[in-house]
Amino acid sequence: MTIFRCELIDIDQLTYQFVSANDPDIIGVEVMLDGNVLFDISMNQAGETSVLFDSDGWKAEFDLNGLRSVLAKCEAELNDWRERLRKSGEIWSAQ
Image (cartoon, rainbow, N blue to C red):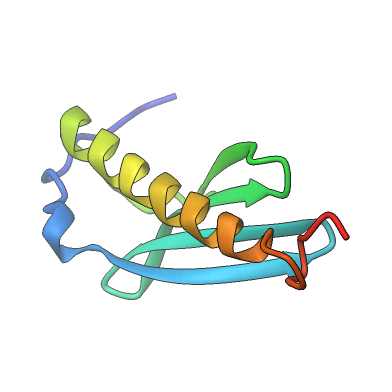
């Protein structure tokens, strides 16, 4: 495998799109640069998260601290969304 270096991504240029699916029942955030999805962070009802990287070989290089901050931001947003969905009468409530 050959890996080529590229310019570091400026995390301020990233955009976020919140998505949901019902098979499996998850919520997620697509992290994009110039309209291209770089990766998707998903969370299920139990609060378990996963990251799916774009398999199309989109070249993306992050500063490690920048990537950590993007992941932390997305996880916090998903946790907030999950908590709203778990309130009484909402779709993920225990009722």
